[in-house]
Amino acid sequence: MVDSCRSCSNCRVGNEQYCMTGFVGTYAGTHKYKHCQEYNEQGGNDTYGGYSQSIVVDKNYVLHVPENLDIRGVAPLLCAGVTTYSPLINFNLRPYHKFAVAGLGGLGHMGVKFGVAFGAHTTVISRGTSKKESALSDLKADAFIDITNPDEVKAAGKSFDFILNTISADHDINAYLRLLKTDGKMIMVGLSEKPIPTYPHPLVENRRTLGGSNIGSIRETQEMLDFCGRKNIVSDVEVIAADQINEAYARTLKSDVKYRFVIDTATF
Amino acid sequence: MVDSCRSCSNCRVGNEQYCMTGFVGTYAGTHKYKHCQEYNEQGGNDTYGGYSQSIVVDKNYVLHVPENLDIRGVAPLLCAGVTTYSPLINFNLRPYHKFAVAGLGGLGHMGVKFGVAFGAHTTVISRGTSKKESALSDLKADAFIDITNPDEVKAAGKSFDFILNTISADHDINAYLRLLKTDGKMIMVGLSEKPIPTYPHPLVENRRTLGGSNIGSIRETQEMLDFCGRKNIVSDVEVIAADQINEAYARTLKSDVKYRFVIDTATF
Image 1 (cartoon, rainbow over the protein chains, first blue to last red):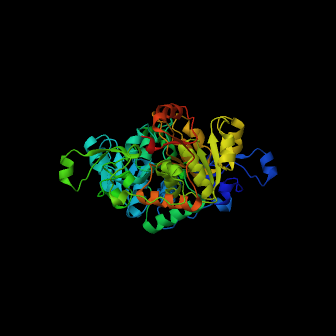
Image 2: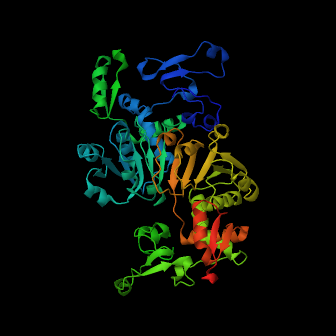
Image 3: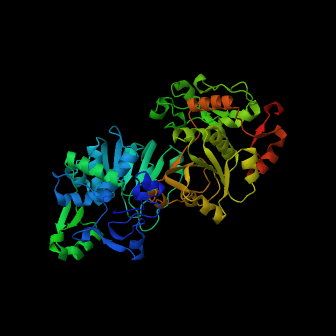
């Protein structure tokens, strides 16, 4: 996000990510300067974000990266990082909570790092066991549940206070809701291409809530970066050169990356 | 609710309505005294609730009715009253909120009374305009929206902080979610016979939440009764004799009642 209208009720309270007229994405966006009529008359200007080697941005949308962090692992913090950090703050993940991250990809692995760093008991919920070793050994999750294993689902019962749902593939959302205890909440940050149906019944029967969250505000993004600096948290990345983009894209579609590709713009 | 297990994690914190083994309903329930093995061996005992002229209940499940209230209008407070009061407390309806009640039946009319009594700006959302006069004149709602009127829906925009959804008929839940502002919440208390599909997209795009709530705890029910006593709130009822039950049931199915039938047990 590199701009927003700056005047709507959401922008005024620092929720630029929910700008009523839509924020300007760092890439694939169109600059708009509502306070500058002349600029608008020129028809605006596309944003290329991380695919550009430099970008002009209003100072209110610029962030400071802690100097102790490896810049390669910082890049995805501005997206996967804040997208998972923001809901944990806004929906009040507590250190005494039983917390679970559903789905272990680019978003999910950041959710696990934050859950552990926030002091919560952190479980990874995945389909199958292929990601179990990574979850427990690499990411230091406290537990792992294979949602396709009825014994593990039954043993978990209604035990979670908070589930961060990062799954973008089609899935039965109700099976995850039923893992929440009374007053538990599940927050969606992954969006499938198709809508995912859910039902009020698992909500009513235990006063559960289902929420959604979209990236984070500029203030929160800086707060997240500062937190990562203090805790030495970065995204796990694989750095590629510009000529490897097509190959990396194909691997991304197969979820064959731990956990984000980062393009070295010096190779453009 | 006249009993619960009294020992599960929910009962221990006063959430008897979410008892892990299921609470004992005032009617159509089966008494269970888990602490009394001999009683269990006798096979328990059915509850008839309001259809009985007397009932034996553990003292922890007995409530005190404020003496200034008309007992006829108090009867539905123990169900429709607490079912609408409890979510407003637990999900934090604030006096500065724009609040809406979706559906104006037995539950909905109590939701309107509580919204007004809590000091919130209270709107009734209904299908068509047949209930507009009752909502505004009788129940003192601040506004009325006909959800089938695109102009009224467009004018409302994303304006509500809190929607209490009392609709038990099939409906497009997403149309209601989209009336919520950023961080707005919709709480379901009505349950259709069929599941109602919803989608994460309207949740993610404005950090909205969808929750559910089921009656209320004993402590909350007493709190609600005391509040009603202080504010002189009762349910609007039509009192019938026992021999009018079949007629009343037929009218209930047609939503032809303002807003609850109460049976005078002296006529049994």
